[in-house]
Image 1 (cartoon, one colour):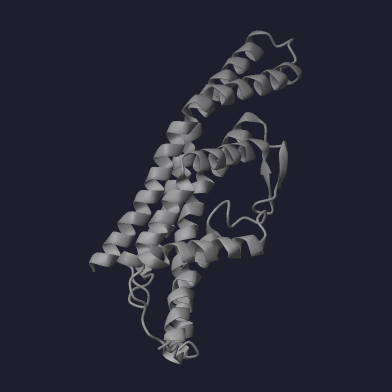
Image 2: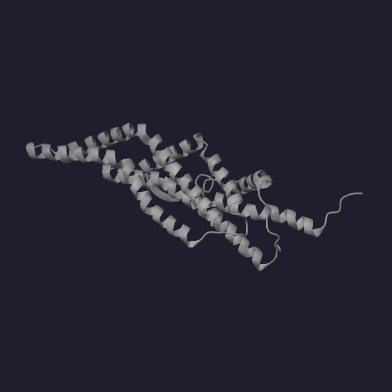
Length: 263
């Protein structure tokens, strides 16, 4: 006797796919690289669908809610908010490198060298864009995208659909990440800024010792060359900084998910 497919079975299948899809789509909408303007929306939607299909067998049972009801719309908003919040936390971690490049460029006199950032739609300095591109390459090389998808899949186990959501404590913790972002960016460029300060002090001493020298025509190209040399030397430690910053971001997400699951 052939199996009979009822309306309740179809509703259960559709709900089991749609509720996780909204969280995954919200995450991909806000996360760097995938959520940038350079990736078309249809490709982002396709990645969300494929990721949802891949993690569906691992998900716990979803609540049985009428698909056309106010409760369903509230559940959709909750899942989108969770996904966007996760992606925004990763975005804050990424902006550390952009901010570090901006700080160094302004201190080194490279602030006039700016270009359009196609990912964010704003003008940034070349140094900031260089660090962001380097961070993207390291992120993919170190399988960071797979680690984020793993955390997203684990969030369905620790934060089941329809039971818990984002609370005010997380928003306060995200706001505190702003101070951490500035501190981390400053620590990245602190050695370079210190070296530039010593060079500028040396040029000031030369100006006082030999006033006949034109410090503007002599110091500007010297500072440009020396600042690029410092940036080139500082690339030796960029991988270490990226690992520590990315580990902090992943740890922040894991700690919050586990803390919400234990409450």
